[in-house]
Length: 193
Image (cartoon, rainbow, N blue to C red):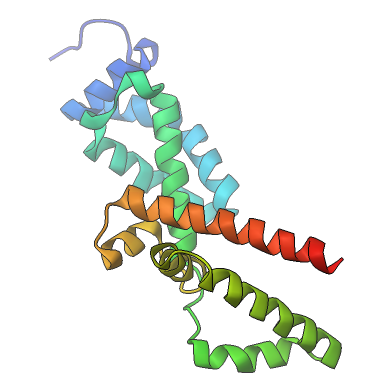
């Protein structure tokens, strides 16, 4: 059957997305062609690795296909929506490629190795004490969230699952704790100068 209407290259972004959702192979190919350089550009900008960026681009288009029905034009263009998906996929890929978290008991040995002079060791120990005090001063839910995210490398979704709270709550706790820690440590730094 021959297609009627404009060629896919002339179809608006929203119509391409609708065709992608409908499973039209010609429209799906046109959708990928139209956005592949943008998606790859976002991915490479975050991860800095071409092979990983290609994988992220593919995952982005797969996710766009699976979730096309949730696209809301009131929240931004298809281009913006797809860029956000690519960015989130790239951040997730970076987190997945992070080194395995270190057990707190092993951390002291690592600090000693890195701090090769008594002066550096003293400064590192003092900074660690200040950081521990600042974390201890946080509300318990924020302290747990920032430790899970910052020290153990958990994503906000993993923190939310562990704490049995909504994702937005976990993100808010991490963001609020990080802001309070920055402010507290900046104040202490000014006091020491």
